[in-house]
Image 1 (cartoon, helix red, strand yellow):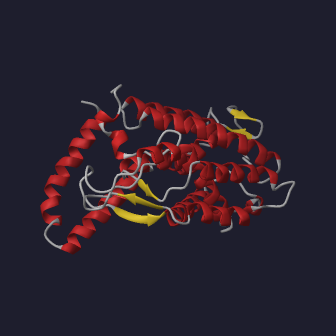
Image 2: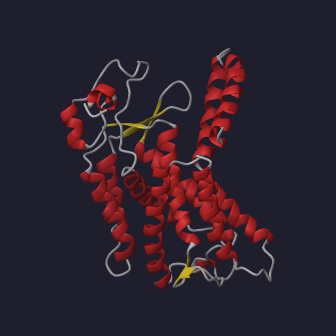
Image 3: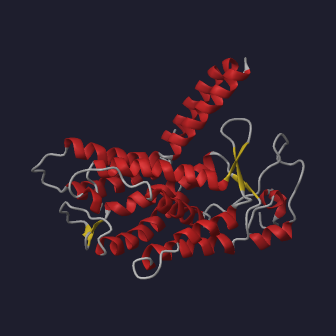
Length: 318
């Protein structure tokens, strides 16, 4: 039995014990659903939480004269964690692909930003490119890992998802602005407005327990950006990297960074759609085979999955 199967078995056993109690009253049902929501969120953060724990732990206990630099240790530890997650089947290979893509995209941006003094990595290391230690790419990768795992764990589906070209245009423009605003006017406010235009009508449906819930996509992106900003404060407090405002001593990361994270979350989500194509929502309260079914031709045009496409009889090759 794999570790993943063992964990699933233990969770199923605990659920079997708690379910009768939770079903007794509405308050208990909501409390149990909220608990499951938190547990799934924690499970989705598995890679990112491991990285943050490593950064904080290394800051607290790393010996002054260790034979390996702290940054190099973080690189090796991140690779080992990734290998362990794959070996124990706690992470899917497509999610590992997302991590690789984010590592490359994040490292490219890190090289540019550190060269322009946006932040620095003050400690020496061997495993680095220029002024960027390789562990920094894993911090961006943890965001992609979280989004990919969240889509899978909560069976996230979308209502009024825009045509695929629009999110990609927003993502490319956001990524480009991280570079071009050093030479050209910063178009961040325009990108915020563009994001409202693209995703203003879009809701996502997530299932923490038995009942599907809904939330506006932009609200979800904003909440994730706030939590990443909090994690960034912990990372800088641990001295993993330093902003210009922190060179005289640690200070909270400016709240304006939440806007940058907001755009980066949108970029991250769009990249994740390469392996998790956005699926249309199910009709709440109905079985997967009942109710509204989107037009198959329209789904092909927009890139969204229709229930018919998921059915074994939908394709003669299956």
